[in-house]
Length: 168
Image (tube, rainbow, N blue to C red; front, top):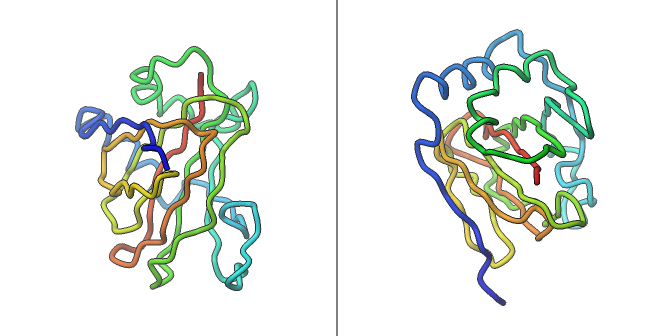
């Protein structure tokens, strides 16, 4: 298998901008929505009803879906995207199992994907060539979102928290 191309940027945002986004998404008033199937491709080897995650759509298609999108401005400006496809927050609860999810693609056409990690935990992102990218707060991972990837649930933190951005 050929090596997956990706880039990692640690300390992507300055501390103040990072903390503003993290505080927003960890606040008691931030709206999260239940999704029953993490990868949306179906779980064949385990009962996926016990494995869910929470999402918050900031942007989808051609329009904002959240009143909070303006608070992501420092992150989005730094990406220098030509246009966005989707921006969503992901909160994966700790299920006490460090199991991988099913590999999936974000969209079946060539585009850039960014994962911006908001907390440290042992639930890595797994790229097509099985490279594991550690979840480290204020880290940005860039890769081709049309290539298979997945993640593992964390066991050493209450949750795995990130923002997934698909763009051109």
